[in-house]
Image (tube, rainbow, N blue to C red; front, side, top):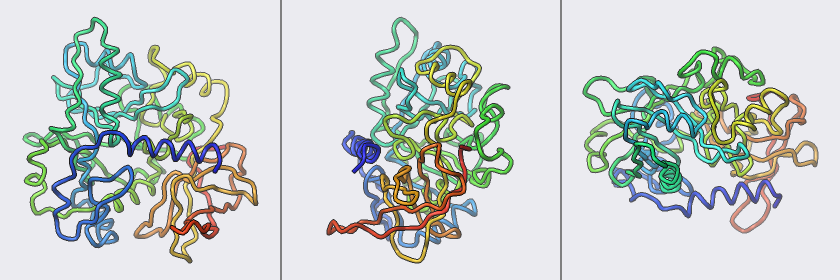
Length: 377
């Protein structure tokens, strides 16, 4: 196992070892099969993942994301304080306007991806499963004398994914609407216009076809909010996410990921705001260089039944040039994936994924893969 693969496995292990919310009540629905790994605690599918994908693509149904973490920040200084600590311009975030931001290490590596929406009194943040305690603890330690209060409310609030591109209508629960892969979310001169190494313009990006939002509901009312609406599992949601080239923290990221590598400057980084932790790396790479790795979309050979797993090696000839970050079986495209490659990998090179290992430890077969550029080399 290579260093990158070990790091990928370690990141996944950290996510699984973190405190998890209670198993979802929606796992009692007919046909529910629980997911494993980072998505444990909610349904992987409800018996027909292909039909579930098609329903989501048509704008119908919910996805149980009640394992995601939920953190609230209250107090009159909350937006200016979050603005100063994360990558996004949040100073004038209007109520019910959705955006995303990143919390970086001092060296500019992604630590948390924050889905942010404010209701006028409270800023609501959802994060990857198991990550809310660490985020809340770090934010709490950074309050100093500011008028802010931080709380991990994962035990009281649950998240539902819904294939709609809309914020909260009057009378609806608060919703975070995914800005991917759109225009700069808050201010002119932000992300999408200046990310010169993005391989595809926003108006041509496959993510524009994916409508998505996260609805925040009280955990005791989760089942009542879903009602009789159709449910889809994480299998379906992940397949559509991968097809949209949408990065996910803990999947497309490892211990040394910087935002440029996964095209996160589109929606999560404002390049013309004041100082924040990790900004020096963001500015230096953007102004003076290129990211050392680049995200690619993989069309995988579908002649077999194997799918790669996260961390499986990607080879050019017999040389390792990267690793798989996510893979799924799409209802139209077949087997697909995302991978992080060395920037020097030729953009038109045919690749091979070595993965699909069996439980007996016998190495899996070699899966041919064609790359499609997400971040230009």
